[in-house]
Image 1: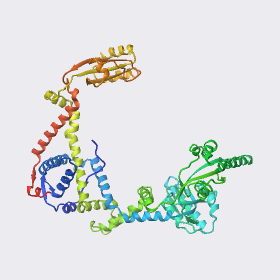
Image 2 (image 1 turned 60 degrees about the vertical axis):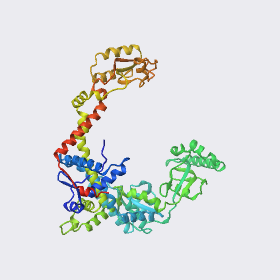
Image 3 (image 1 turned 120 degrees about the vertical axis):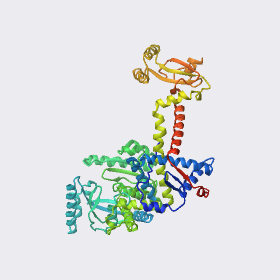
Image 4 (image 1 turned 90 degrees about the vertical axis):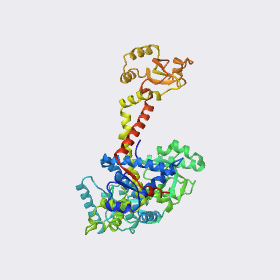
Length: 578
């Protein structure tokens, strides 16, 4: 059995308990009052889950036992274990998350992303690597400040990009990244790119990749995404004039063929394209939007109509012939929302910190009176969140009930593990004694054969196994033999009745001869078979004995709890439960 990663209360403030304790007390277990609201919540939940609902009296008795086990867990201080506390704190946080989510703020971030996505913007930047050490990072930031100063005093952006930018894809073309679409770059970078006026120089923008100085570019309506396939003839940067001419002649020839017979496009892509990755797919690429492909491949892909084939296009990699397969308009707000929210939920996204700051600002206003300090701004975020958890416990019944239910369910699990499940599983002597005392409870309707079923490669191997088995006295010896004869024989302990295995039926019960399960084995036999009318030892029915022994331990535990911990039921309040 495994618990979920929902966790319980760490410490709830006294004020929260007082606020939650206004309803009537339905019972008191070991000095702890149980409010009617808690009992009703669990009772109604139990009724909904039962095929045959229990009567109120039956459930009340079961509930008392449940609370007695929780009391025992608390007396053993199981709630103080660090693993328990960690799990509980995590659950408390998970459970509180929907209550602490500012939907208006999140929607404003989604709307902001949507508004940006309506346009594509021409982006220019100079990028400096951050470095690893704090000293390197500060030096890189200082260099970015210096370069920005040069730009503000009339420095040439393209020259500085060529000299200093570590983004080699754009540095040699004036720092131009081409047109980009929102949602593909760090938040601060996109904000700067979209808000700068053409030619305007940005502040220093920090991203996970480095420091950036951006220059504003042109804007145009977003074009959505396209699906294309292409055939490429590569032109290496060091290609000679003859090689370049040969590539151009080849692409022109391919273009002539596919224009005359478009059905040949994918076959030619597989046969002739130098882009082997897409070539294997008939030239097909993944869906892409602005800024995801090099120019002029990008522009050509959007310019042609669906099913149209472009004339040869030259990019920095070589020549392309492109066929457009499909196109999609920019996503709607509702279509974008799940994707944007997923990005925001990633701690690496800068908006994650904005959401956290918004929450903490709200909690500071809400819980200002909770903390007796002149400056609420000195209270850490964890303290503020704990204050909110306490407030939720006192004021939100669903939160309180779920938290209590998981906390006590977790305690019940730990206590049962110690007192019943693990105890029975590990108590070999206790299991044996229980079996010996209850042998008559374990009967078989059919005889069972007990022994070791051997399947061997040939008679010679079978003879060696039979001889070796005479020296085996326990499972460790059998395990060693399995290793010794691996690939030559299999050795399996069996306890079976007639009809469960054809080889056993043949050897013991007079069934027809059969072939071994594995084709490489030709011989099978049962070593020292015993035909039993009833279980011989506890291990013959261990699973049944373990279950029965657990039930016995459970009964003994409950009787002990009833004797140790006092329980008082308020029958008048119990009768009010609907």
